[in-house]
Length: 124
Image 1: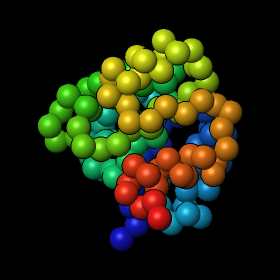
Image 2: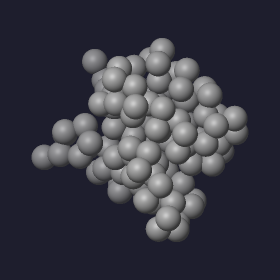
Image 3: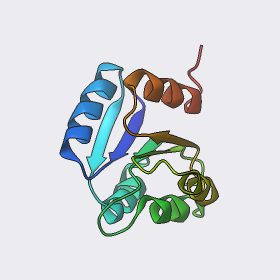
């Protein structure tokens, strides 16, 4: 069975492009576009990894990440923050919330795939 990635972003172009690229790489993709949906889908789908935008409607990525990382059912799921916010304070806040990686937009899909493989233990 392919590993499942939950992709949360409020930009349809990012969702489309990343979903396509990740599916080509053999992953099952579940998508959402706001913070509350991110929590609901994470709890329902139990993904192997979450890619989470920071600036989301309803609930920001820091809050979603913190809630999941404080829940013993979900704390083990790696979370990649994927965001246009590039300040060091944002990166620190992401780490404090429990993010396993922080990637700034714009990004190269190869870079993201490498981080995903590292976090899922597939690095060769």
